[in-house]
Length: 254
Length: 255
Image 1 (cartoon, rainbow over the protein chains, first blue to last red):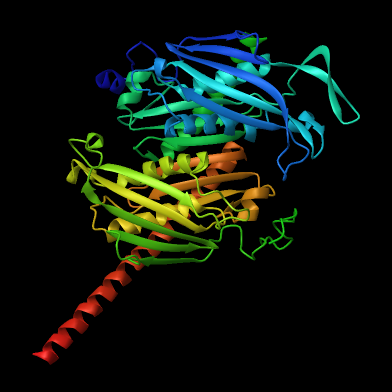
Image 2: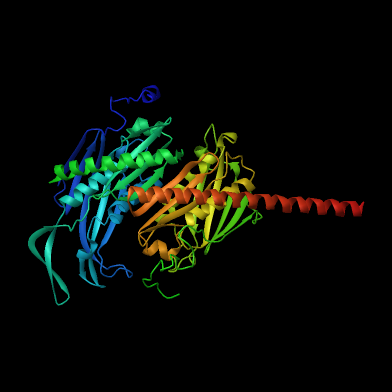
């Protein structure tokens, strides 16, 4: 495989900038407010959204709350063990969270029910079902698909009490962030690494971009190092690729 | 102690709340070898950050099954003292501390020649005694010195510094208020001689050009910090040499 990469080819005949086949199926979990199942090559990730009410944070009394969690469930890989979230699942959740939060994808102000007292809490739960590489991108795409798919009950506030109407409305979305992860293997950089590529890569750089080509999150991972020029190149490529995938995701989920 | 209200972060003269220029570092103080029991240690003050880094190792791997046949296992624990932040922080490791422990380890491990010590662990402990933004960077800078103090062979030192964006301008080395109210934060760690980046994270909003500016600013600052690290190591060895000279004088007198 290393031989192939040095010649600019990959095991599955992909070019260095090609993503694997992507399928997103929205609304697979009817009891959740929103959901989406992503198939990225053989990687499978399911994201579910639950919207509930709760107390706002004291320093942001007018804003709803976003919370992202990820589970690397043991059935997804021989290397995943049952137990509390490990550093990989925490990093995964926090990088996906950063993309959504920093791009202000959800208009949290519109999720305020009563300032200082009651807000909507959007729980984004990422469930990795089959690990064949690039969990960050697959998980964030599942989360994004689920957010676009999500519906919540319209409501009104009467005498401090929330009453829900039958009418459904979407989550107030303002942006659609998409992370692009690149793997450095022997001095070459490839996008959307599959599992075998991740096992030989020296390091990985994820760049999350919003709809205005603004970078909202970045994360280097792995024990290797990047040159400054490699980083600039990866950022450039990622911004362009993010545009391409964003359009594809929105189209598939509508 | 009161909660911070929104203030102008950059004034008309282009100076920041603490009087710094846009590309100016906060004052840094470095001390090497300040703990007795640890194999290596260092203390950093970077602005109002006060951080202790300690290294234990190479030491026998416990539990045995985590040992690697061909190199040392490097472990890292980044932790904040409950009194280090404005609001008391629970001592239990938070998700943020777990993520930072991972990225800090990944920032330092490339510099460690771990293949010299198979079947051992090298344990890094970073305790943030007072936090004012940029703790992961200051922690990396101090830990590199602690590793040197422990005599662990390294390819080179790692220096780290964050850049960011505040009121539309790219600035170097965010302070706490700038991190909270600003538009972007970009921590970077650099191995300056080989010019390789071992830590890169970002949150906020940057255009591609702003990102390039911020990256250049932070890597250049890492090079300046690297010079300070070398000075700190030199003076530690200077002090050690003086102690040896004194002991020899005393021995001569006794004899």
